Structures are given as structure tokens and as C-alpha cells.
Length: 130
Image (cartoon, rainbow, N blue to C red):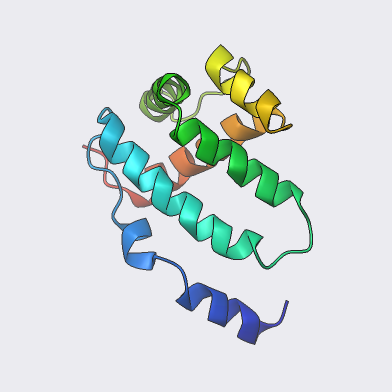
């Protein structure tokens, strides 16, 4: 992908929304809104690739965000990861509701957890810890 194409894609991103990090990680609605903006940004790039794995991963994350039971479980994982005393914790067991959704869209549930881990890392790096 050329630099010009990358710059064009960056213009389409909701940058101001991505920089508005959640202030209260324990607030499920606030974190969900933020993850929705992250998902929208990632979809901008996924639409431009020739692969389908990124589209399937994003479909799985979107399904989790739209399923109350799965969202409650994944938000709990999000909080545990974010509040880990050592700054990093690995989650290798996927909540059943998230695993169900991953199976429905034909995707590995641990990839969903990896995406959540990446977002947690981003917020930890660029957010202000309170």
C-alpha cells in the first residue's frame, strides 16, 4: 500500500474519537462506546485489504459488542486486564458467551481476546491512569 493511500485512509479515521480514551474503565457503556470507535477505525482499513480474516475478526468483535451477555463478560476481562497490578496479564480462557459468538462467525475466540488486550495496551500507554 502506498503512502498516499495510507494518508487517504488516515483521513477517514475517527481520530478525535480514538483519542478520547475512556476515563472510567469500570464504566461498561463508556468502554463500549470507545471500542465501537476503535472498531469503526479498523473497519476502514479492513475494507481496503484483500484478505477476509480481518473482516471476520472485526465481525466477531462487533457481535460481542452487540450481545449483552458477551459484552458483560468481555468488559469484565477488559477491567481485569487493565487493572492488573503488574501492568500485564494474559487471559487464555475465553468467556463462554464470547466463545459462542466466535463459533457463530467462524473465528478463534482467543483472537478476540488478543484484540481486547491490544486496546487495553493502547489505553495504558496513551491514557492517564487515575
